[in-house]
Image 1 (tube, rainbow, N blue to C red):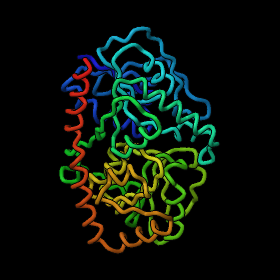
Image 2: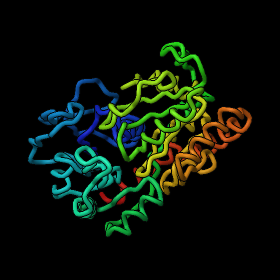
Image 3: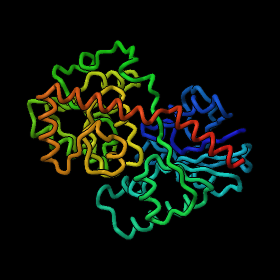
Image 4: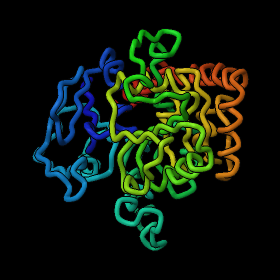
Length: 350
């Protein structure tokens, strides 16, 4: 069976790209997989085909893709994005699967940030739901995601499959020799943020916490529309991007992950931190609460976030207790089990 994976983004620093790079090498042990995307400048452990693409003005990390194919040479299509390439392949007459990486908020965030007109939000929801309703099966990463989309009108058959974590990369099997603090000149223990620097991630909460706890260090890694709002403070270490090796070193060296997003569909960063026994501080978000479980702490306000960060810094024993629970929780999301479920869905459609 030949399966075509479709994504408008493969070389961006985001959860979709991370998911694809993590799971396709495992999945191709069972099925013949090819990834169709836009920009390709690197070598991958799986077949990748590039379509004509043009960088988006003022957002050079993003591409407008111009599909040039007329026929899909595959038994099944699995789509991961709903931009130009994903939209085009959603209209192809073939058996199709989609994964709900997309949230309507993200379609408008680049232009309107957190001041999105309600009428445009309604239109974005209509587009996203109509897009997913074109597929034979829609895969959600959590039950919370499934409920959210079904409440908005999703009618396609829906399955819940975690994006899956490679448990062999956990702290128990880590061979990393990188000293993250030494490499980046960080002298103290630090709270870690990794993700887009956008309103939906509540980066303002992280900045406020850093300002209210000046004696503690914070490392913020990412790119986005709110980069310029990150203040230049001695206790805030801002890095645009880090290598994969440095990312795992950061998870190993940090004291906790701070992830107060109010919109998430999968929470991959939280799961990566949990592999390294790190407690995850989250907002009252149903997706993150399901993913993190007892391996994290829910913070309803900035004030609660500040207090929990202080407490975790000051109480190593409690920090380690939550970290152990985090690793136990993430073992429920084994990538091999996710692949097995995907294979069963593919075979049921062909």
